[in-house]
Every structure is written in structure tokens, then in C-alpha cells.
Length: 116
Image (cartoon, one colour):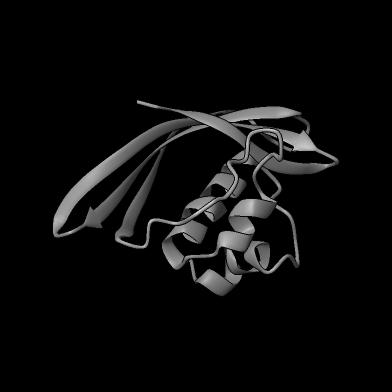
């Protein structure tokens, strides 16, 4: 799916994610394109690190969603487990995380995650 039809509207703020999974996918894309603003806006202020910085040496190269629990239209919380592939300094790696999301003022936000 093209960026303009998928994550672009979430990144520029013209619409909000309808699910925890959609927010997680948009956050992955924000890391991939270097959109620090979206990451800040979509991170719960209680758990967001200050300052927040991107690792510009890491290129994100693929995403696989492994599991989704809750996080739909009628839910207040959700979890998404994913594996993200990356390249850094000529080496390839993978990050696997189970992320927690909650609705805050009607919008999905990332709370925290457990790296596996």
C-alpha cells in the first residue's frame, strides 16, 4: 500500500489510527522515514523518553506483525507483537517486541513494549 494511503495521513495528522495495530504500523513507518514528530505525538507522555532521538545509522527494512490482542474500535487497550528487520553498519538484525497501547482522550497511543 502506498505511503500516502497508509501511514502518510497519520504522520501528518489528518486522521488518527483506528486500532492499536494501525498505530504500531504507523510508528514503524515513522522510524523508517525519520518522522520524530509522529513518534512523539503517538507516545504516551507518561512513558515517553525525554529527549527522544532516532538512530539514523539504522535503516528499517521490513515489518511482520506476529500477534494482536485487543486494540480495536471498542477496546481501551491493546497489544501488538511484531518483528522488525533492520540494517546497520552493513549488518542485518531483527527487533522483536510486544507493544502495549491504550486509548488516551479517544486516540491510540503507544505505552511501552517488551523486547523479546
